[in-house]
Structure formats: C-alpha cells, structure tokens
Length: 296
Image (cartoon, rainbow, N blue to C red; front, side, top):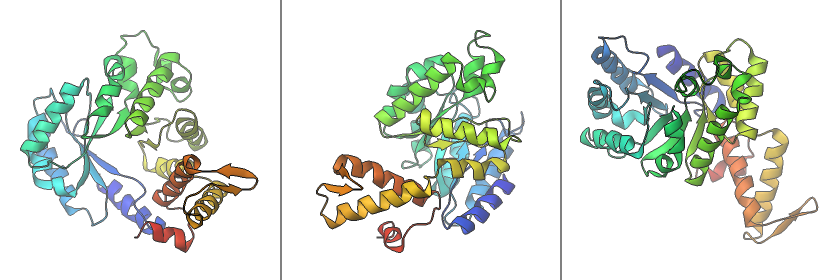
C-alpha cells in the first residue's frame, strides 16, 4: 500500500495531475484475525496521504462481521481524505442501502460509493444498483463472477484471452457498462492477472475501452499502470481534432460549425469535450487556453 501511494505521488508530479486512484484493501488485504489492526493501518495511511492524492478504501462485504467496524474506523476517522469507499460483493440495492446507512452513521454523508459486481444476480440488478444516487462507479469482478457459476464457465474464461471471448463473461461486462452509462456512472474493468505480458495488457485495455465501453480499469501490479493510463488516453490526433472543434464552437457561441468538411453541432460537441476531459485527466499535453478551461 505504501509503495502504491509513493508511485501515485511520482506519477502525479510527472503528469501534472493525479492519473490513478490507490485503493487500500481490507477485504483481501487483512489477515484473518487481524481485521481491526489492518483497518487502523488503512486509516493511518489515508490520513497521511499528501494533499491532492486520490485514496480510497475497500472494506469487507456488507454481510461480513467486520463490515461495520471497517466503515466506522476508516470512514469515521479518515472519510474527509477518501475519494470514495469501495464495497465488494454487492448483490442488490438493499446492499447499497446498508452501506450508505453505515457511512452516514460514521459521519461520512457525502462520501461516494464504488461497488463491485461479482455474481450473475448482481449483473441482473446492475441497472438498479447504478441508479442509486450514492453510487459513483461499478467495477466488474471477473474471478468471482466465473466462480459463481459452479463450474459451468471454465477457468479459461478468467484468462486474458478467455475473458474477451466467453459469451457469458462478455454479456456481463457489456450489461454492467450499459447500466453505468444509462445512469451517468463510471464503469471500471476488472484486473488482468497476466502482468508480465504488457503488449497483451495493452490490447486488453483497448478492448475494454473501445469495444466494451469501459472508462476505467483496475491494475494488479505497478507495471500495469502506465500502459492502462496510456491506453485510456485519447490519441494526439484525436485531441487536436477535439480542440479545434470545441474552439470553433465556442467562437460561434455553440452554433453549428464545419470542420474539415463535416458539420458539427451540440450533439458532437459533447463527444469532443469528453475527449478533452479524458486528455486532461490522463495528463496529456493541452494548449494553454484549453488548460485554462479546467482552472476557471
């Protein structure tokens, strides 16, 4: 966890903005019997993170004996330093409500929730879960999703190739991303465990972003962060086009304009503004005037 926070600070200095979140893990990170001590460590690290850092915490599931203690400790003492709280194994809107009640009881009434969708039933309810006002993002949990099928989906569906070809996994990923976009939430793709094969990782990120509609992705190893940030960043040519169209639109008071022989209006302005936003959030170089739009 400390190495992740250090890497975040280094890349923030390099890119001029915080390009990835660090999630301090209680669910899989805490040893059995040491949950309270681990939650205290997560709280200490969150409180000690530098200004501008984006630090989150993943607590135990809502039906776990240590869930309430996790939330009371971490959100109660460090909620003002967290960018969100992640809750795993969310199955229903009722689970979201349980998490919100715990956050509110801890005094973290404004802290957003990110939830993990990890079962067929949760995928079925993804649209309702995404509609909840405190939910900011859904993340897909590939390995738990496959395991939830009791052997009906083979282990190969958890591999780099299999997760982009098995029909049940693809359907679940697409449904979850669609639920997020329907309600203006962020779909976050699962980790890729083959962390030493960076070309394959880059291909997986491109598929997640350009084919399945995901806008974020988890990493499982520090070496994965740069390839993920790069793959989710718009290409230089796309940035140049977006800047030219938005500048022309602003000069025309958002009336229709033409660019390179094509007509653009407010429908396409939304898309190209989102390209510029992605460029900004991933630390890409932007003209000085455009950078000023994010400082106003």
